Image 1 (tube, helix red, strand yellow):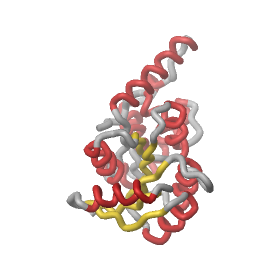
Image 2 (cartoon, rainbow, N blue to C red; image 1 turned 180 degrees about the vertical axis):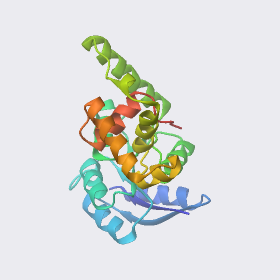
Image 3 (spheres, rainbow, N blue to C red; image 1 turned 60 degrees about the horizontal axis):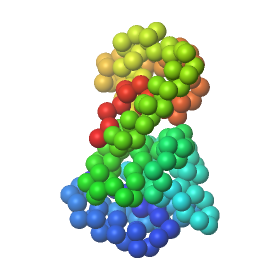
Length: 217
């Protein structure tokens, strides 16, 4: 069962989402909140698997700020941004804030359900159109800069670990899956960050997305 917290400043939207999600197998809305601050409080109280977070919630704390704070407090809770903004800037900012996915409010119900299932399982979710735009922008930057990030220097094992880290797996999970020690995973991760000149996990996730290392629904 996927426990879901709905955070949106519009009561009608919250009610609609609750009716949709509670009617689906293995999904249950355990709570709702009308703003970012309340959403964080409810998440700490309820410990949901997924927080469905509205992007714009005036007045008060917006969805991006709430997501960033929530991920620091509950790193294993997945945050799925639900937004009316089909804009790459918002998409990048959501990823940097720690969101596991980004879905438009205009998307079909099935896309939202697929997104919730994906982030609940530890994967990331973007629409194919958003993924295509990210790749196009990345290739354009490479063309303008004349250089390609040093991905080719990574070993096959490092590429495998990079993908798993970006999908949200912990060092322990990766160690168990690849049948290696946690210390070895940490060593590979350190090498990856150094070779790619990355400093933070959001940067790593963004890089993996641009390289097409994540499988999106």
